[in-house]
Length: 168
Image 1: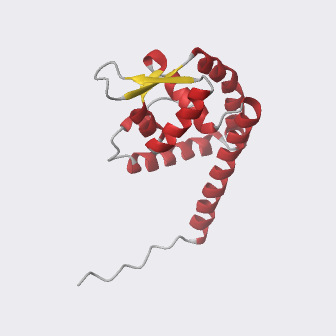
Image 2: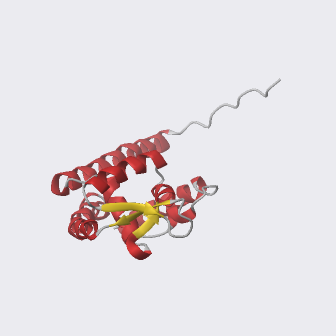
Image 3: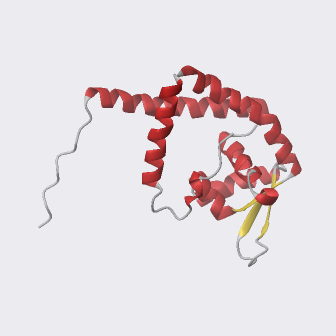
């Protein structure tokens, strides 16, 4: 016979308020950053993040599976996004030179130019919507808290690369 389920450790009122603030704040922040990029450059926040990840790699190239892991997105979602980006001329795909079995996404010069144009808008959005709205100590505490959450959730992740590279 299975053991009786334990009573959940319910959140107290302050924890519930903080949790809800995190959920709605992060949703609104990501939506606003996405909207800014779509309006100004006709790219999504996910497409921008792909360009950032590729720009940080030698040859501005990365295996598709590794890219999906680095973004913490499903491989099918990244494949669909790369399809759109390839049609727009921001990336190209090809076989891996090592074994020819994997698929590599490589940022084109056009994609790199787009990233250079979009980065100032994105960074200004991050600053004005988040960084400049909180005290330095609170922002540092938020970073530490999210590092702890990330470390816990990716401890068994196949690609620890989620932790590599700074977001622009």
